[in-house]
Structures are given as C-alpha cells and as structure tokens.
Length: 295
Length: 283
Image 1 (cartoon, rainbow over the protein chains, first blue to last red):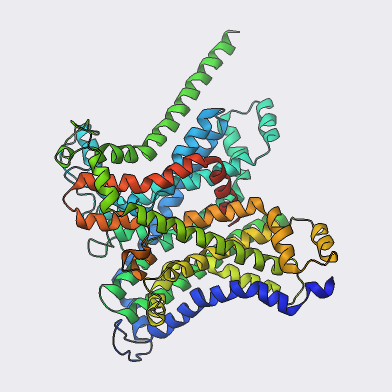
Image 2: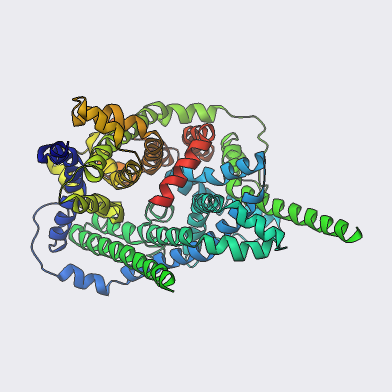
C-alpha cells in the first residue's frame, strides 16, 4: 500500500498534465514576455535589445497611471456602491419566503450569464445619444437635453455603471449564500430579546459575514485590476485614454500602435501588480483575523 | 391590543417597502434586456422614438432570421459548445488526477506542486495574450481549436484543482484501500471509485469553467481569423460591422446570442446557484 502511494512514476504521471499545462500556457508566455519587454520589437521583423528602456518609458507614461487610477476607481465603486447594495439585498432576500425568493435571485443573476460582448454592445445602445434608453428615460422625466454618455468627462462613470450593474448579481449571490449559512438559532434568540431588523442586521448578519466580505472585497479589487473586455468593446479606453485599463492598454499598444515590446513591458508590470495586490490583501485580512484570535 | 395592532401595521408597511426595493433592483437588472428584446422586433425606423418601449407596427421576426443566418448562429453555437465542453472535460480530468496525487500520495514536493498549480489564479489571463500570440504563430496553432483550448484549460485549472482537492480531502480513504488490496491499479481506482464520489465538486467545477470561458472573446478574436472555430460572441462582434446602420437587426442578433445562456441558466438555476456559491466562496 505505502509503496504504491509513494511510487514516483505514478505521481509524476498524475501531476504531469497539470504542470505541463501551467508551463506551456502560463510560465513560458510570461518568460517570453519578460524577454520581449526588453526589446523594441514591433510585432514583425527583428527585435533589438534595449534594456530597461520600455520600463523607464512606462513610469513616465500618463496613460499607464490613468489606467491604474481607473482600476482603483472601479474597485472603490465595487466596494462602496455594489457590495453594500448586494449585502442589503441579500439580507432582505433571505427574509423573503417562498417562490419570490427564487425568482428574484434568478433575475438578479441573469446579466452575469450573458456574454460580455452582448453586455458591452447593449450598453453602447443604451448610451446612444439618438435612440438610447438612458436619454429616453431622462426625456421621460422632463429633461430635454441629450447627454453624451461616452463623451469626455462622462465616459469613465458610464463604464463604471456598466461594470457595477453587470457584477451585482454575482456579489449578491455570494453574500446570499453567506447569510444562508448563518445559524438561524441566532436570529431566533435575537427576536426573543426583542431586537428589530436593523439591530439584527448590524449585530448578527454583518459581523458573521466578515470572512465572506473579506473574500469578496479581495476578489473585487483583483477583478477591477483585471478589467478588460467590457472597456475594450465599450470605449476601447477612449476618449483619449480617459477610460483606459491596464489590460486594454497593453493590447492597444501591441496591436494598434505596434509597440509590441512596450506592450509586453506593461504585461509584466501588470502581472506583478496583480500578484502584489493578491498577496497584500491576503496578508492584511489574515493579520486581522489572527490578531482577533489572539485577543 | 391596540399597540399590537399598530405594530402589525408598521410591519406590513415595512414589508411592502422592502418588497418595492427588491422589485426596483430587479427592474434595473432586467429592464435593459427587455428593452433589447422589444427593440429587436421593431423596424430600424421605429427605434428613434422618445418612448421607453415601442409597440412595433408589425412584429419583424425577419430580424431574427437575418441574425440567425448572417450571424452564423448555428456554426458559432456549435463551436462554443464543443470548445467549452472539451475544456470542461480536460479541466476535470487533469485536476482530479493532480488532486489525487496532492492529497493522497506521499511525496516531498506535494505542497510545492499544489502551490504552483494554484498560482495561475493570481495571474491575469490578458497578460499572456501577447506572448501567446507569438508562440501560437510560430507553432502554427493560430486559427486552430488549440489556440483556445490551451489557455481556457490552463486558466480554469487552478480553480479546478482547488475545488477538487479540498473536496477529496473529505472523502474517506477506506474504499480506495479496499479496492487497491483487491489488486486494482491507481488509475482505474481514481476513475471507478474516486470520480463517482466527486459528483458535487465535478458539477461546481463544470459550472465555473463554463461560466469563465463561455463569454471569453479576447483570446478568440486575437488567435482566430477564419470562421472555422469562432465562438458565439462573434455573432455579435462581426454583425455590428456588417449591419452598422440596421440597428434593429443588431438588437436581434444580441437577443439571439444571449438566449442559449439564459435558457440554460433558467433551467439549471438551482444547480448553477449552488455551484457558483460553492466555487466562489472557496475560490
């Protein structure tokens, strides 16, 4: 038995497919990216080695900082608007009994199963100045001016609205499951003590949801950093670079501006930022829960 | 008595208010889709109204016929289903095998390999597009099914390994030991004894992998050039160029391509909800 469970060849054959996939699709491309980031490769022809030039340019590139700022803005949008709304909705939904509960839960999640391509084009139409839904709603309430939703100054907020709208159901569902996992005995006890809905929410639901909130906030920040598809189709970072995000920017640099080497430098920095953010967030939340346990 | 009655009334008002909140959010979430469907049945001239919804003079199902044929709906749907199903199967096989080695077998490097396999969760998928484009170009893999399968599997694998390995730890070892004593080899034992016990986590992994990859189009639009392997989002992407002035047909193609996912979701609602909840909380 023991011999069978420590047979090197069997172990190797079991993990090899996974490791090979990792090397072929993730590790090798990243190494190649690091190499290209040190060259002035345009995508075709020869590449000349230029050392850290691309990275030096990147630090001075205003669009790069705009992209980072937009990611932070989006993360804040998720944390300040989407998540509180999602938690409250989940808490209300939890109290609802019967069929309505399932129907609402189903409706809230539907935007999540629809392809980002459709979502982006749908919102492009919703923002359309001549027949878009949003301007029609404004007309409906008596505001007669046409708003250029994807124009300068407005565009980033319009992008944030789409992303917050699209991800709402996902966040809601996770909080909903978290709430469902809370022991109902606690609520019964609170009810006997005469606690009303507000007190129960702030004293029982929220504190017990802390681990779920921490996981969700981490995921939201990472998702904000990784954002690409919706922006690519909705604005492609425009007007100018106002709605730029890192992933979209590297793609644009490589395939539209033919600065392939520079695009790869952004890729490398992008990966490092994501890794750093994940590690940092895990550290922060772990430290906190550890401290609490010690107390 | 009087006091209790008042309280009841207050509660009823509160309940209606909460209900209204839920309905309001539901409208925000679903109205854009209703609007999409409504506009997809009108003629392009009718779209320029000031009303929120239009009642088309004549319902133009023809928009859908155009969308169905010119959007290559069937071909792209077939490609999407095929590529995603293959990706799910590969992710399941690879992650169950790796999870078994990690959780059950005794070897020194086990925790290291586990962490390497999970590392992919932190890497942004879009950061690998540029180098992968060069690699696939050199290997002649662009415009083949592999250009999509390889990255789809690779980036769904970490979650698959995570979910299957944490589930496997909760399975008792007695059964497999009995099988091994009976002379069954490890590979057969994994296939015949372990896998059937993993149903719950297999469902979760499948759902998460499907959701992750079904909507993906950045890789697809970078690595594919001909129609052969293009996936469903391309019905929409290509159409907006071709029918740039015929807005109603564009609405129709969007509604049509959204339909399969919505139908599957509504049918499997309970399973998907459970799967996402299990996958997301742990992932």
